[in-house]
Length: 134
Image 1: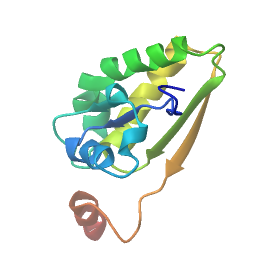
Image 2: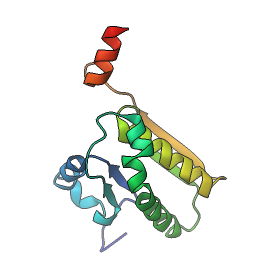
Image 3: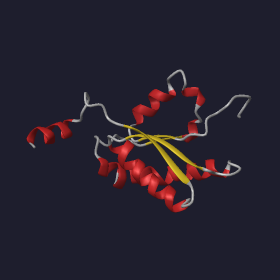
Image 4: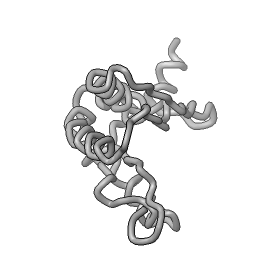
């Protein structure tokens, strides 16, 4: 509870800065702590490796610092709940990296994921071109 209202203990992360901006400007944007929103400078173009090894790795330390801060505010941390997409570079690649780092730092805590599968109606150009050549 903060200032007489409930504030979710969550961290919003995306490598595409436009996504976080749209959340902040939405009707529910005021629910989230601005300092718990971590964004990159550019999207990954649906590239898993960019999310895990390059662009995502650039912001992962900052995300982990916020995770540590939030866990320190807990009486007893039971585990972590992660909602992410299985597609794209951030949802898949950065999440993979963060889950590895969380497991290293809190090896005895549960990580529960809520994974969103990409729509078959919307696909990336790269995936589409590879699929059509196969």
